[in-house]
Length: 407
Image (cartoon, rainbow, N blue to C red; front, side, top):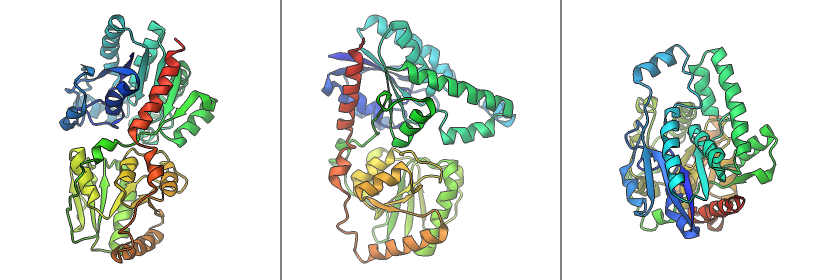
């Protein structure tokens, strides 16, 4: 069996995208034994210890700690707009992760290094290992760097103009170097692939598109839970970032104008502003373990997907939404990847960002729901099945194998 070193900062119990856990669980089925280098559980990041039960006992995980910026320094540097930390706020992890990875590579016969970004620090660790040990490297980018809209908004707020210009230059140059150094680059959305190819002049054969997907095992014994069994309910799963607040507020307003009796439920890490909204039909629940959250979503009438008007990439929650089989209410750009998936899967409705038009859409949808029109609703199951994680990991294993052969 071949061995792969996974450079994966957000590995359980840290909350992340689930890809790292899927790789650890499923790669052995396809001839790869993973060894993981991740952040230590002591780092200041949200955790879900229930995920540890899913990590196989025979998977070797090296959890590496690092110093983190003090709260006082972070506040002061952000206040002065001088928070220049390159490549990202996890850069202090680079040195201990590199040292631990070197130990593993000297001890084990490793065939491939696989990194996942963000954090972008992980890609730098992997690139150094590739050069030092002449070992194939597959780099996964779940969010692009120069084209990361959320990150760019954050930089604009936290850096004075000269530092912002320096940051942009460093990011573009480094992103180009990383993309060209990797034997293969994996991205998780069509939008990201288009960005990378057009921005850096790379061909289709350099970039592999493999989406995040869902884990079928999670849904096998999933039980339905109802928060409001006698109400029309709409559930949102996941984090709510500050950039989401404007479309969230527009959606809440449209729902109340369309049907004030409908209950909107947010489950996950919400921004402080969301917690301050005083609305009788709005329920906020902080993080639940994945099974409970999905059970409540299964007991809802609709699943809510919200993205800012400029966000065209694929949020990972869409795949679990598809598998749940409930109609999706998607407030996303018309030409975005999520809109494409929902249309092709016949999985729900693309809502307008125009408030009046959205209200009319919701009024019609809610009326049809109360008339029982969605009782037998289900998306195109054959289309949805292509996003099952076992098949996606099989594709990753195939890509990894071909690149390992080049060694």
